[in-house]
Length: 264
Image (cartoon, rainbow, N blue to C red):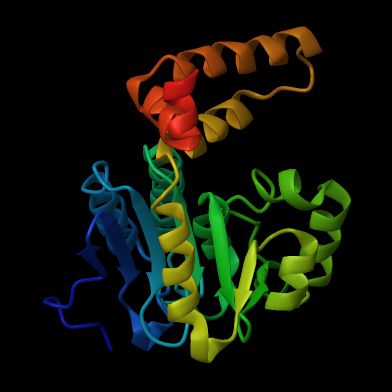
C-alpha cells in the first residue's frame, strides 16, 4: 500500500544554528525513492546558512537503500523498471553532491541499519556517528544489482579497493563496531545514549570554525595522487593563506592568546 500523499518524506527542523534533516518513511525503513531523494535535496538547499547539518532517519532504520517493492512493481516492464532505476540512482547522486556542496560540517547520525545505496548518504557527510546496534550491508549480490551510492566511487577512499571488492562480493553484514574499526564510522554510541552522543558532538563543533572543515573537504576532493607533491602542497598553501587573513581567524588567534596578545 502506498503512503498517504500528505506525509512528508523528509523533515527539516532547526535547533539553533544546527539543521536536522530526517528521512521520514519509517514504515519502509526509510527506503529511497525519487520523491524522497528530491525532497532531501530540496531540504538541503535550505541548510546553506546552518552551522552544521545532521542527517538521520525516523524510526528504527537510517535507510534500507532503494525500495525493492517499487522496483519489483515494475519488474514485468523492463523499460519502466530501467526508467525507475535511473531516476532513483540519479536522484541519489544529486543528493550526494548536494551534501558535499554544503558550506558547513555535515554529520550522518546513523540511528539504525544501512543497506544498499543508502551508504552514500553516510559517505557524503564529513562525520559519521553510528548507534552500536546499527549495521551496514550491501545486498547487491543477493539482489543482482550493481553497487551504487558511492560503494565504488567513495568507499575505497576510506577502506581500500580490495576490501571494498571483497565486502561487495561476500555481501557481509558489518556491525557498527566493525564499521568503526574499518574507518567507515567515526564514532559509536550505545542506542540508549545515541541522541545525547550526537548532541555532545554538536556541542564540540559549536566552538570550531566551520570553514575549516569545508576547506579540508575541498582540498581532499581536489587531491589527485597523479599530481606532483609540489602541486598538492601548493593547494594547501593557497588555502592556508586564504583563511589566515580572514577577520574570523585573526579574532580566534587573539582569543587563544588572551592577555598575551596585548602583551606582544
